[in-house]
Image (cartoon, rainbow over all chains, first blue to last red; front, side, top):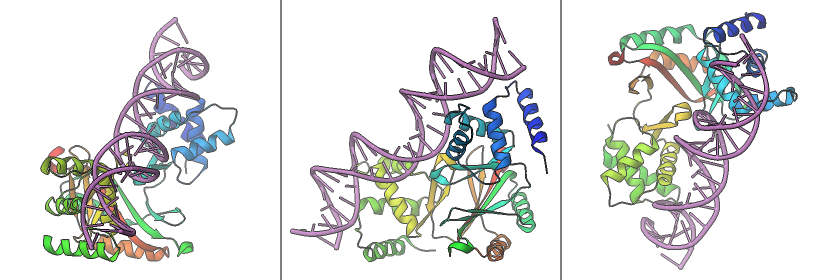
Length: 145
Length: 145
DNA sequence: CTGACTGCAAAATCTTTGCAAAGAC
DNA sequence: GTCTTTGCAAAGATTTTGCAGTCAG
């Protein structure tokens, strides 16, 4: 697993390569995602950061802008919830898919080699150049049934 | 394949069972989905219906309300495009998944037994009661590469 | 008739943008 | 110093809601 220091270096390098600046706000958001291994909406992150760091001024727009930046840099990734927006997580772990409980909104991650392989094959069959893929299994988790 | 008459009967039966009324607007939207075998946003449907049937008054709110109703009745189904909203299609065909081209926005449908089966197994493994599942393969289609 | 449905416009959600002030390098 | 970034509030985009009039059964 990557340490926070390594992640930070990586992020700083990306910023430098793109003539972007390293700011307190960007760092806080990065750190938040590193330390919190779940899926958060921009609003969640905004609220929690304001709570945890009342001394730092941060605006919701910055959260959106930074999450977009992190996603473009492949540091974060998002799952989309239709009209209800997106949730973000650190995107450095191994690719995985999600089980989503409609009752408690909990998200369980899983990885399945067979599915991954089949996706490749399907893309090939359609002469499709796959850049990404997502799979969601929707339903009720063990606790909510 | 189901004929339009059969579909209409089915829809009317659903309406009757729920003490809902059969209206010109609802019929038009149903017919539109039946006749147009692609994926449409509510806005698309609204615009196209107004063009094709200038004599019928229809509001965007009705389109949204009807699509929700059709989806709840399992007559339509939707794919979500994150912030860009949802696209609807007739949901009576066999379950299938989608390849989505980021260039031309074209959507290709596919079905794969192995993936379907794996999804069942994964749900089982997590003691998850699956009610739905979606898979999207994102990338460039043959023509756009 | 009665209660459901409709269009409209206003409200609600979520996200992006313009801008002046602040901050990174 | 220069150029990017920020927070704020306003604007956008999409979807939902309240309501009075309309329509299906």
